[in-house]
Image (tube, rainbow, N blue to C red; front, side, top):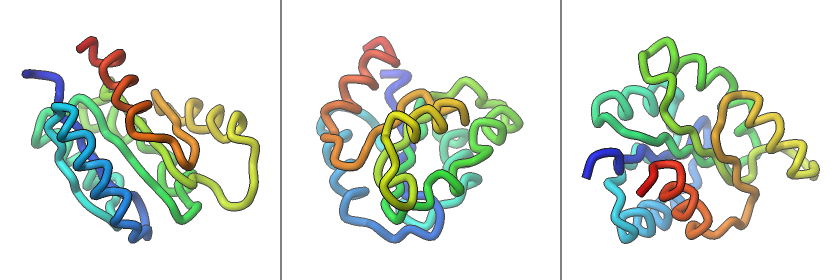
Amino acid sequence: MEGKTLVLGVIGADVHAVGNRILDYVFTQAGFKVINIGVLASQEEFIRAAIETAASVIMVSSLYGHGELDCRGLREKCQESGIGDILLYVGGNLVVGKQEFSEVEKRFLAMGFNRVYPPGTMPEAAIEDLRKDLEL
Protein backbone atom coordinates (compact mmCIF):
# COMPACT_ATOMS: atom_id res chain seq x y z
CA MET A 1 0.00 0.00 0.00
CA GLU A 2 1.33 3.41 -0.95
CA GLY A 3 2.29 5.85 1.79
CA LYS A 4 3.48 3.26 4.24
CA THR A 5 7.24 3.45 3.76
CA LEU A 6 9.31 4.99 6.51
CA VAL A 7 13.01 5.68 6.79
CA LEU A 8 14.40 4.84 10.22
CA GLY A 9 17.83 5.61 11.59
CA VAL A 10 20.00 6.94 14.38
CA ILE A 11 21.40 10.37 13.55
CA GLY A 12 24.84 11.81 14.11
CA ALA A 13 27.71 10.17 15.98
CA ASP A 14 25.26 7.91 17.83
CA VAL A 15 25.83 4.15 17.82
CA HIS A 16 22.78 3.01 19.82
CA ALA A 17 21.76 0.07 17.63
CA VAL A 18 19.51 -1.99 19.92
CA GLY A 19 16.61 0.48 20.05
CA ASN A 20 16.88 0.97 16.29
CA ARG A 21 16.50 -2.79 15.70
CA ILE A 22 13.54 -2.97 18.07
CA LEU A 23 11.80 -0.07 16.29
CA ASP A 24 12.49 -1.69 12.90
CA TYR A 25 10.88 -4.93 14.11
CA VAL A 26 7.86 -3.25 15.73
CA PHE A 27 7.09 -0.95 12.78
CA THR A 28 7.51 -3.86 10.33
CA GLN A 29 5.15 -6.00 12.42
CA ALA A 30 2.64 -3.11 12.35
CA GLY A 31 2.60 -3.31 8.54
CA PHE A 32 5.00 -0.54 7.55
CA LYS A 33 7.80 -0.95 5.02
CA VAL A 34 10.86 0.05 7.04
CA ILE A 35 14.01 1.30 5.35
CA ASN A 36 16.52 1.10 8.20
CA ILE A 37 19.65 3.11 7.47
CA GLY A 38 21.16 2.12 10.82
CA VAL A 39 23.36 4.14 13.14
CA LEU A 40 25.79 7.02 12.56
CA ALA A 41 23.44 8.37 9.88
CA SER A 42 23.73 11.85 8.40
CA GLN A 43 20.81 14.08 7.44
CA GLU A 44 21.76 13.52 3.80
CA GLU A 45 21.53 9.72 4.22
CA PHE A 46 18.01 10.03 5.66
CA ILE A 47 16.97 12.29 2.77
CA ARG A 48 18.60 10.13 0.07
CA ALA A 49 16.90 7.00 1.42
CA ALA A 50 13.54 8.81 1.59
CA ILE A 51 13.84 9.99 -2.02
CA GLU A 52 15.01 6.59 -3.33
CA THR A 53 12.13 4.74 -1.66
CA ALA A 54 9.42 7.42 -1.99
CA ALA A 55 9.02 7.26 1.80
CA SER A 56 6.24 9.13 3.58
CA VAL A 57 8.07 9.50 6.89
CA ILE A 58 11.58 10.03 8.19
CA MET A 59 11.95 8.72 11.74
CA VAL A 60 15.04 9.98 13.53
CA SER A 61 16.21 8.61 16.82
CA SER A 62 19.01 9.87 18.99
CA LEU A 63 20.07 8.57 22.35
CA TYR A 64 23.38 10.26 23.08
CA GLY A 65 21.91 13.69 23.77
CA HIS A 66 23.02 15.64 20.70
CA GLY A 67 19.84 15.20 18.65
CA GLU A 68 19.07 18.89 18.74
CA LEU A 69 22.36 19.76 17.04
CA ASP A 70 22.19 16.79 14.67
CA CYS A 71 18.62 17.57 13.56
CA ARG A 72 18.97 21.31 13.02
CA GLY A 73 18.21 22.21 9.40
CA LEU A 74 16.75 18.82 8.43
CA ARG A 75 13.39 20.25 7.33
CA GLU A 76 15.15 22.86 5.19
CA LYS A 77 17.33 20.18 3.56
CA CYS A 78 14.18 18.14 2.85
CA GLN A 79 12.61 21.19 1.20
CA GLU A 80 15.73 21.80 -0.90
CA SER A 81 15.65 18.14 -1.97
CA GLY A 82 12.03 18.30 -3.11
CA ILE A 83 10.51 16.35 -0.20
CA GLY A 84 9.57 19.32 1.94
CA ASP A 85 6.23 17.90 3.02
CA ILE A 86 7.57 14.54 4.27
CA LEU A 87 6.58 13.72 7.85
CA LEU A 88 9.47 14.11 10.29
CA TYR A 89 9.36 12.19 13.57
CA VAL A 90 12.08 12.33 16.22
CA GLY A 91 12.51 10.63 19.57
CA GLY A 92 14.90 9.58 22.29
CA ASN A 93 17.31 11.42 24.56
CA LEU A 94 17.40 14.46 22.33
CA VAL A 95 19.20 16.97 24.53
CA VAL A 96 22.02 17.01 27.07
CA GLY A 97 21.03 17.30 30.72
CA LYS A 98 17.65 17.47 32.38
CA GLN A 99 15.34 19.76 30.45
CA GLU A 100 11.57 20.07 30.60
CA PHE A 101 10.27 17.92 27.72
CA SER A 102 7.61 20.46 26.74
CA GLU A 103 10.43 22.94 26.02
CA VAL A 104 12.42 20.37 24.05
CA GLU A 105 9.30 19.48 22.08
CA LYS A 106 8.66 23.16 21.25
CA ARG A 107 12.18 23.54 19.88
CA PHE A 108 11.87 20.46 17.65
CA LEU A 109 8.42 21.47 16.41
CA ALA A 110 9.90 24.89 15.59
CA MET A 111 12.63 23.06 13.59
CA GLY A 112 9.87 21.52 11.45
CA PHE A 113 9.36 18.13 13.09
CA ASN A 114 5.78 16.82 13.07
CA ARG A 115 6.10 14.55 16.13
CA VAL A 116 8.56 14.59 19.03
CA TYR A 117 8.82 11.74 21.54
CA PRO A 118 10.47 11.80 24.97
CA PRO A 119 12.79 9.06 26.21
CA GLY A 120 10.94 5.88 27.11
CA THR A 121 8.04 6.37 24.69
CA MET A 122 6.61 3.02 23.65
CA PRO A 123 6.60 2.38 19.87
CA GLU A 124 2.81 1.95 19.94
CA ALA A 125 2.45 5.72 20.46
CA ALA A 126 4.35 6.39 17.22
CA ILE A 127 2.39 3.67 15.39
CA GLU A 128 -0.86 5.32 16.44
CA ASP A 129 0.44 8.71 15.27
CA LEU A 130 1.66 7.22 11.97
CA ARG A 131 -1.78 5.78 11.29
CA LYS A 132 -3.37 9.18 12.04
CA ASP A 133 -0.85 11.24 10.09
CA LEU A 134 -0.88 8.89 7.09
CA GLU A 135 -4.67 8.47 7.27
CA LEU A 136 -4.43 4.66 7.42
